[in-house]
Length: 177
Length: 177
Ligand SMILES: [Ca+2]
Ligand SMILES: [Ca+2]
Ligand SMILES: [Ca+2]
Image 1 (cartoon, rainbow over the protein chains, first blue to last red):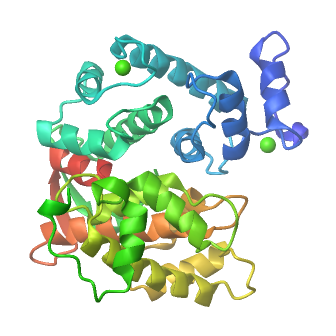
Image 2: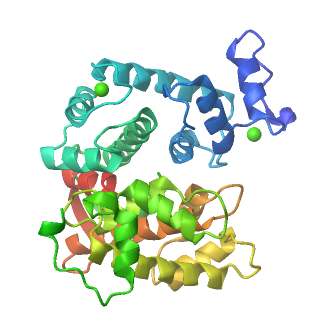
């Protein structure tokens, strides 16, 4: 509800865009984000941007646990999305609009994740369609990898590379993203 | 390729159905499974069954890591799906075709998972749309919860309720589903 917001940052060029997408409740939910990303054509295709990826992105940023994004979260998301888009285009060297498995391995490694070839293969298999990785799946993969790694590191205070998980905590931090 | 199969189980009534869905390669991939589940109307709506849920289901059963299902995996999946459908209908008490948050909590608990209210809330938030849980999201949730719990228990040999995860193993067993 407008009354609960900070004053509209009239000088911010994204504010008008945000309010148009957010609609009456003043926040962006997964369906609104999907419509917005499909219209921007960020994935380079005319097919709808994955709703599941939209939900994962919102879950990643949604610190107040409402399932929706306010303006600051929305801006943060667009910054992250632009970073992933640049990364994606850098590794899509043949400009096919998809990233191939070996390009995906390089991309994940380039983002600083240190994962074994076995884990890389499992990730690539999970996020490819017909042997290729499309942009929305690429984003879903990046979001999850980032969130899981953050969840792990937050529990690995001594930076030992190992974490002792209780079952409930394991489920909480893997099922919510 | 047919030559690599076991002889067709001609007496099995599902064989003809399977081969029709599997197409030329004799195995069912995520797109084929999506088409099949959308046509059967198992979700009780005319909207396409979630492709992402199809991929998660295949990943759960795909022991030979091909990203596709053979006949036995296909039958196993249908058995699991029927179980989840019954469970879903049991908790959808107002026959709305969706499960409400409090029904979802009961459903998860009834399947024998022991998770805290906090974890339940996180799960429900992740899998609901507009405050409701649709069948395909319900299935995605069940598949993930089952796979994550199995992954956890396999590492918890002493049944202590805690597992010491190395980072790479944590990523492998959470990113592949
Ligand atoms: Ca809204
Ligand atoms: Ca490419
Ligand atoms: Ca096939």
